[in-house]
Image 1 (spheres, rainbow over the protein chains, first blue to last red):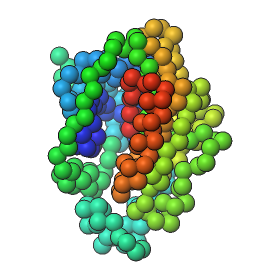
Image 2 (image 1 turned 180 degrees about the vertical axis):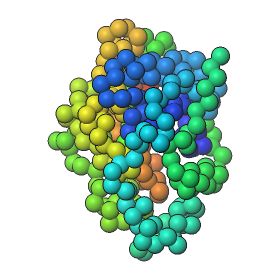
Image 3 (image 1 turned 90 degrees about the horizontal axis):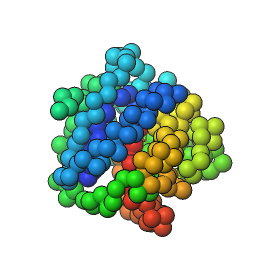
Length: 97
Length: 169
């Protein structure tokens, strides 16, 4: 999505939501990600270029907690009104709820 | 040669993946703005921007209740985070992100302490005085693009920032 909206340079990382830079307290891990991101900035010379950072998260996607404990409001809304899901696909935001 | 190919969808469910791909397909072609790095990183002033809805506890909270009332709406405003902020000083208001980690260690999403260490090590020139956060969930981003973004850019320019790292939630 970041690339699709025209970000000039993208350093992509496969880390879970809420921990994009690393685990809490993992100073060396966070530093490695920030350093690699800034290094990518120096190395990218083409508008829209994407650099895939080599870091691997230590858990599988299923193991990694990446969502809030409480479902977001739009999820609860669509559970009540599943027929509105198609509007989310097209970002056809309802004018009245 | 780096062989890793990041899978941007590996932490989301099938329906969310289809929704985001649908949004990507609907994006018109964008002219990609480009500013060459003006000087060596060791001479640059660096600022961070997080899309995870982080605010100082002393600041006005992001409007979670507005999103609960209208789940199609997201708070389009932003907050300034000073470079000295720590986890104790902030709250994370993004309702689509688990706040536990960044509220325990702000560096998970806004690595201010790590950036300060890079300044001390001489790897960057200076940490900007101000950093920024906004709510990444925004289905109608007009106000975010037309009011919030120019306001952030104005402050970045006032503080002579050379490099901005935008960190997604």
